[in-house]
Length: 431
Image (cartoon, rainbow, N blue to C red; front, side, top):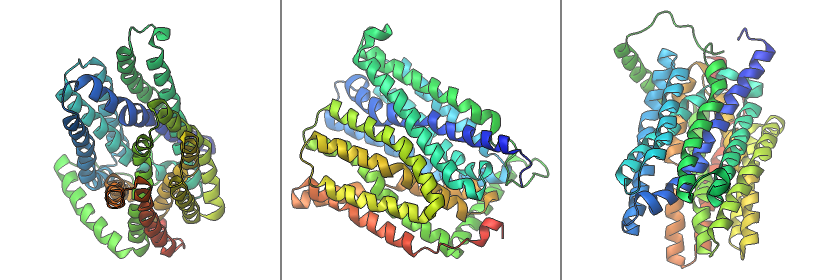
């Protein structure tokens, strides 16, 4: 048990949650909107459109694939050396420095822009392995749902606020003393890095120095021994997951339904474009989703405590079924806004309760390596979904029918989750 006071526990939970506020700005401002647009119109200007699309795909997929492959081993390494906090700081610092580096790149430097973006994405994605695993160090089991939901809700709010500021700055650069929209976008990259660094300070100060569930290290191990121990622990984790039906069943369910959930998010803008909606409408829809997700994620934290995390996830997945079916009847931009609002109501709930449910199933002292597998599946998500949407849309000649294919993933994931035992597992007690 932790010797910290209730006040320090509360402080640690808020400090942990504010890191989501800090780094979610990178997702919205850099990954989703400004980097793809600026890469096409500035750094890679003059290249064939198909080549630009390919390069963007290589950059995004390359970073995700690299982190996906490293995630289980990095998690095992972090648990062996009690390195979760230090590895989080290291990856986050890489992300911040790379994001600020985008500010300095000149027109035409598309190869360098790709490299810097990949480093930023690795910093963001890699850091999240250790951020997620620190949940068990700041929250007791009864606090997992609300603490996880607090992180996601603050992430949606913080990311949305900075994104809204950056959009305003690019629309009216003269109000901010900037000469052009190009300068405004560049400053947006710099602001994102500063935002990330500033709001990560509480986590640096108060989280992970004396984790509640960590076994005190007896002595510092040489780096080579740490790596050997990490590989041994990784093999042991594979065996443990195979032996624990509830863990592997959850991971399988999670892989299916999060693939469907992420596909809705990733394909929404493209679907809006096929409907003929302009860029300003798409940005408005993104902002609606962000700000609605803030209170909705908090609400799902309470729902998870009331109904249980598993039932809360199933409730949110039911909402996604209605959203996908409703999207096939969409006619105009007002319907698209309603879709964005509906996604905001359930998106954070699925993410937050999935994280807290998984945290309740795994050994706290090995949280980083188990979350390595969790994050590996998360990075591998949205692979089947886009393929299904594209293939069904091509075969039927209708993008609306393509969307219905996502129901297969949501349905399979929901069914497996429903079949998963709900009783408390012995490994949470350290057995």
